Length: 272
DNA sequence: TTCAGCCTGTCG
DNA sequence: CGACAGGCTGAA
Image 1 (tube, rainbow, N blue to C red):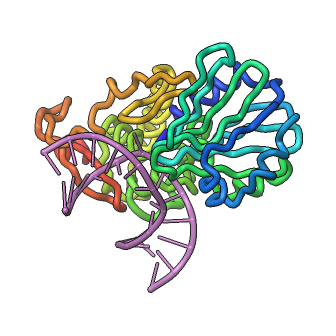
Image 2: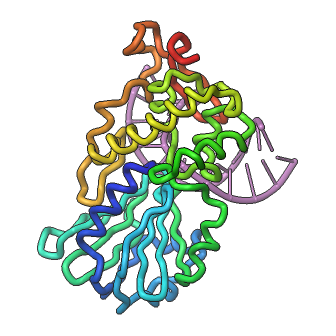
């Protein structure tokens, strides 16, 4: 999916265009998806006439804040939110389209090939409770808090970064890239890092995310941003899905293993 | 802490 | 045909 940099890109695209716009109409393309998410068409229609006051991102979640309610999206592995100007030719409705929100000048379509994405509709005052078990955001976390989180986690680094209860925002791509860039093995125990390694990890984390956001995220396969375009950061990937290729650092072959049921690519020589 | 399950698509 | 894919949940 969309990990932090991709969701942040979408957030910024939407923010510029639909904040202060009133939701005028909703078209449901896939009623079964709503049903699976325990949302009735009537629930969704209750947003009609409300104005979007802000767009927010928390970890990999995207929030459309209306006056009283909040519509939360999680894009799963293949979800996307596509903006279209009403004057442009409309988005072709395919079997992957779930629903479309219509505003004064734009429409916003939620699409998801695998349908692992999710939506939630809540009263605004319930937002913090909803996110109570989500970890601190990777983009804004302080070094002190990052250090504390690492010391709380029992397990290896791969598991740490994938677990959204500690740090929110990283997924498989950015975890593998971060660990390679920091030259630390995904198998290393979180609590057994040296101080210098923690510092470097934090530094690289911030740089990696910022660089990826600057390039509007990574498109491995399906990801497209809010404007329907792919990101560019995949061109900067050093290891993700490059098992069997030579390590860009030492030339030995990158290795593929499974950690926590997730494919992991790393260099056994560089990453200790 | 593992692991199937949720879905659809692609690649070998 | 099986293996794998930006994620996460809940049950054993």
